[in-house]
Image (cartoon, rainbow, N blue to C red):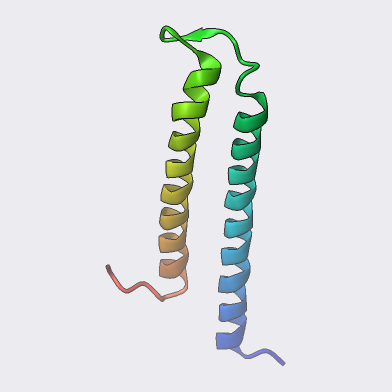
Length: 87
């Protein structure tokens, strides 16, 4: 039988792993998508070829957003499980 604290910890880690897996999948899609299909995007975007812009700036923006989303979601998850330190 699982006790209440063990069930809470199990729920916490399951949600943490789901979040990590989802964000890593997004990272993989962006990395492979930009690497494989970036050059085929040949229309102009603010005076630059879109493929160049997305490989040099767009992917970096998405990677920074992934880090921000992870930190925000983990903070919410910590608060929901009573483990927030109040950084």
